[in-house]
Image (cartoon, rainbow, N blue to C red; front, side, top):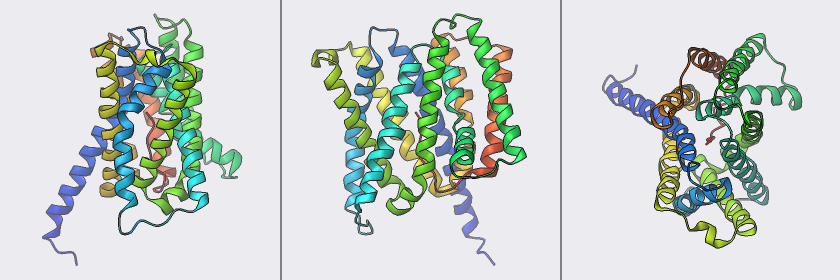
Amino acid sequence: MANPAQHPGSRNQIVFGIILALLAAIGFSAKAILVKLAYRHPVDAVTLLALRMSFSVPFFLAAALWSHHRDDAQSLELKDWGAILGLGFVGYYLSSLLDFLGLQYISAGLERLVLFLYPTMVVILSALFLNRPLARQEMMAMGLSYAGIVLVFVHDFSGVHGSGMALGAGLVFASTLTYSIYLIGVGQVITRIGTVRFTSYAMTVASVATLMQFAFTHPMTAMRQPVSIYTLGLSMAIISTVLPVFMLSASIRLIGSGRASLLGTIGPVSTIFMAQAFLGEVVSLLQAIGSMLVMAGVVMIGRRSLNPKKTGFIG
């Protein structure tokens, strides 16, 4: 029989884990708002992403050093380093780049909803390449989610966001696809390496790739930006990258990845309301219904098929 004295502490851990998961979801979602605010200035996606990673990488390097020197840290094999390089490139660098490019053309609310389709895409990719049959509930969930995206797409296309919207949605959808590929491959790697260690190493890989792309495609003078751009870049690094990554990791340890991921459904909702408050994006009834359909589908998928070993972030 459990010791009653342990219950308050356990409840406190659960409450703390829930709070961390909610804050992480809101932090990730705020990224779209910060990017859209930055695009009001003459700055391109590669420069903006380079600033975000430049401000982020010292924190991930520090986390990587800390995890490397822990007493229980295992030595990494060649296959582990290969996985870190490949998954860090696809899941963090390429996914982020495509997302930043897409945000040049579509609203923050639509961007977050398209990104939020990743559980449905993991199910589809698993069925295609891992011979995992689709259950009826999963097909219903995907139908709901994609019907919701169509509604929001129609809303945005009929409004001020029509120009270039197909390109922007396609880029963000490609970002979601690369992140879904990352999720399929990351499970066993995280089991061997550990969540914090893998995330810090993979984010360092993504930061190096981003800065190399900037160095090859831009003059260094392109880093000379107004103070407002530096402020937004630093905010993206701290509020929407570093803090939510580690808050999500801590939340998963306290309440499990299933609960943490389902709590992440607050992300699209928070993006829509933040976009209304900070960007002046209008929330219509059609957009609200579409958002609810997307989240309902994701919750159905999450309850059925979430793998507790698959963690990370999309932002």
